[in-house]
Length: 381
Image 1 (tube, rainbow, N blue to C red):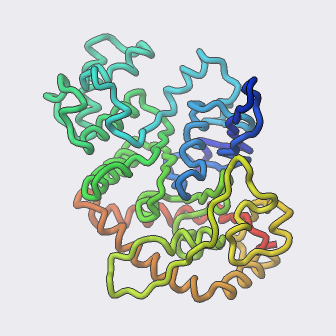
Image 2 (image 1 turned 135 degrees about the horizontal axis):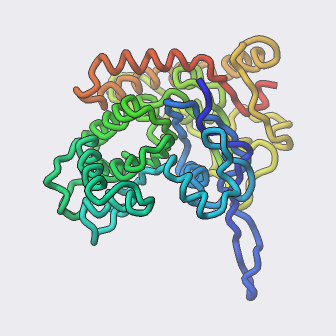
């Protein structure tokens, strides 16, 4: 299986201006040296707290935010540095589903005009062919043709998000960035939209960068998971390994915060001390050391690199055992949380996917064992 998207050492810094002359006095390091790979036909779930840089990373990958540094390669060809005209052509291959289904749609345009706009912009087909394509897109997302003349305010939130998904698929892209695509929807509607996204991925062979703060949703949909903190990736790997055996203390804390739907279940949340540092003034060394319960002296001075912890032997294996022993109690509670989280994911699923979809998803995730499990933590040195 080959990589569709490769992101190498990507950075996005926003200047902070001040003083009478509005000079740059600081930089907000929203995304700071992030690298990852997304394989064809797979879903990479990107998780982390609000403000950690997830959405900025997704937009930088599409060059909706111009990267400060780094390289983005889509289907073997670089995206960074492309002039505007060539970038417009490449954007046929990469699209985005926005978080707010109402704010992302023009209230003055009908559904027909909204879905036809990408086809008009790229001059694809005749007028009649474009209308047929719009009708095909509506059918693809579960809407009927008679809604073509309606405006966004005439739809529910779930229907508006389906229109947003249809617009993202209009140009038959290879990569879709779903930026908190279901967070603004009711739970029952979330399940329907998630099932729709999963079904479309299977049918169309899409690669998804799925950004969310809802760990149960990410577990339900993703093959691989990347955990982000203060603009950096701290852990990445196959979804089943991240949820079953998280290595980084921050990942453990995140998983312990997943709500438990069973009131009789015993669980203990890992509460991190302090507040998230400002990305305008990040701490030296490991960005998590100011809140980490297992901080070491080197954590305050040296930025940890992402290391492969797949093997379980050597220094990485010893580090894994040290961390497991140090937080054994919280690890057991996190495991309880995760088992209940899986139940929550099943609860979110609807009849559209059923047990067949669940088994299919498990099979595809088993194939992700080749994806390396990496963690940026001095406990694994």
